Amino acid sequence: MKKNKKTNSKWIKKRNRIKSSLKIGSLPRLVVYRSNRNIFAQIIDDLKSETIVSASSIDKSISSDVKKAKTKLEKSVIVGKQIGSLATEKKISNVIFDRNGYNYHGRIKALADAAREVGMKF
Image 1 (tube, rainbow, N blue to C red):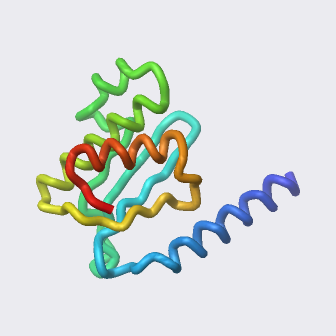
Image 2: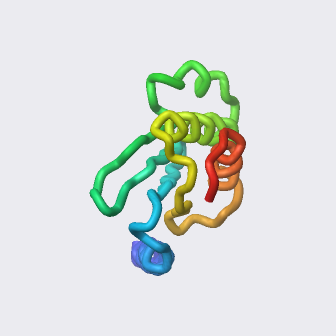
């Protein structure tokens, strides 16, 4: 239990350090959260403190595509395309990518690449 608490506190410090280095306020932020089964992405306007758009692998609008996906990586690609298309509908093209302390690898990278394919820039 002590080791888990230490690891969690390291992750929180890392996340806060990265978040403080971002230029918060100049552009909306694309925040990614990854759990063991699902992946969540949302675009946040820090000046107004509100979520503009969000997408996740448990959304009902993309549930049929997610059920067909065999791996979590494929789910991430679907969510990335969804968040990108929702952002273009709201006329958001430039964002700051906040990977929330996760390494830019695997599911996080797949989501980012899929969002870039749709037309987002970060």
